Image 1 (cartoon, rainbow, N blue to C red):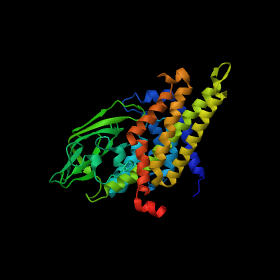
Image 2 (cartoon, one colour):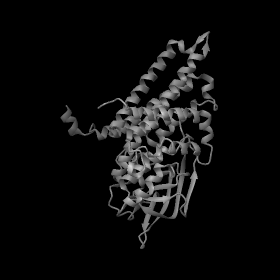
Image 3 (spheres, rainbow, N blue to C red):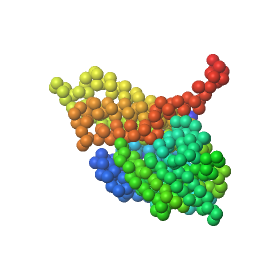
Image 4 (spheres, helix red, strand yellow):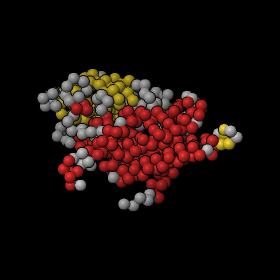
Length: 395
């Protein structure tokens, strides 16, 4: 394993950091999340056209840059540093990999070039609050329990004689669901006895589709409630025999890497801002950063952030470690954000200061993709740590 980044990877990081430093400061973030889109549309267009961000990890044959999860993770580290509100995660880390893995040639040729150019955003709609489980991050996703198990609730799909599908039901926590121009909806077919979960393509302007933006803890991660009332959907893929759980698990591993990198970027920025503040804030005639107790707290945070960064970079090389890296990153961000609020003193608790944005990102991401102990538990389960036979062999 070569841990050094290439010149191209360093250039991606540098260019994106410079652009976000100019156009995505704390006040820009607060203004962007209050728009109907929930993000700065002009900035998203620049990120797509000038940097090709949504197509970074897409194959060149579909208009992408042909890069890997590593490059996308490095970009996410910078977007996390700025707390950029954008459809990048939902589009490039969730929807695009599923279309690439499951879509027919016609579907890939029709959708992926538009996604790569930023002309179409997409997201994954999963019933209930089971996104982390659907992606295989906090448990096995093979039994379909995360989608309702074919019982009441969730989303149901019924095939029509003409070969079309009609969708009924709702999903409550859909990332960028209010603004995405394409929805990948997970729905049950076959009733309860022969229940099977499939993915369907639903345009954002489909008849019978109702989308309501929800109030969320973290405004930089917009979510929506999706209600489907006899909505026509197109089956993703050629038939209903595709390995949906496997594709969702693969997408989940990649998304976990990107989320871990985002958390590391946010934690590093929160720490940098706190260090800069304690160097300037004086108490008892000296900078509070000169007190030994403050130095020790910041040193502990630095070690934790660097450990999380190492875990995220390793997961970029081996996405199988994505869930564990995500747990490490969320822990680091939560600890750093909490200390940032404390060490900023009275101003750190105010609505006007940006410290609360980092704290909310940590809490909201853990609610949506965690909790941390389940991420670690799933990683331990996959590593065979809970298998008695494996334990005997190890002993």
